[in-house]
Length: 230
View (cartoon, rainbow, N blue to C red):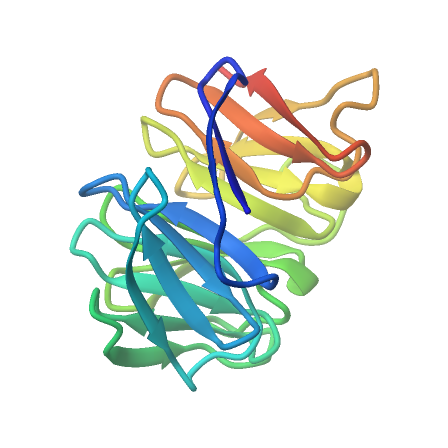
């Protein structure tokens, strides 16, 4: 089931989907369609905002995905945490390439979970069990790594959801530090969002708006919370 809300949290529509194994969701930058990756049949489904299924493709090139994103050129990126890689597809589902493998080096991942497209059509991946972020260019070539396990600003402890803001800043759900962090594309720390009443306990996935707001899936009480980070 997919539930859609407006920016104030009011439910606007609901539609059913043909799987109980939906994991990642993304919105197409070109037409507003909704992409969902599911792990029962290893497929990516595309729906109109009204819930009409307009395209679906199956792939043997991923097994257990959570994060999904679509670039401005239409290419689809799916993060496979079990295979420690990112699978790239053409809009019609044609497989392009697999990026990364298990490891700790540049362009290597250990249980990556989520992904976001940068302003240059590259992408940033939460390399979750390595407790860091990686940025790759539009071809999937490594650009930079930042972060390490810790509690200081710029450190992470199981980073999960990630998004890119209106000025290119990167917002990260720093799950086990119970906070959000905002960093520049060079990895420098911008700000940290914490909340004293527990509303940021174990933040999971996020959605970042161009106006400096971020919507957070709250792992504590299964709600969606809205924060301002700038």
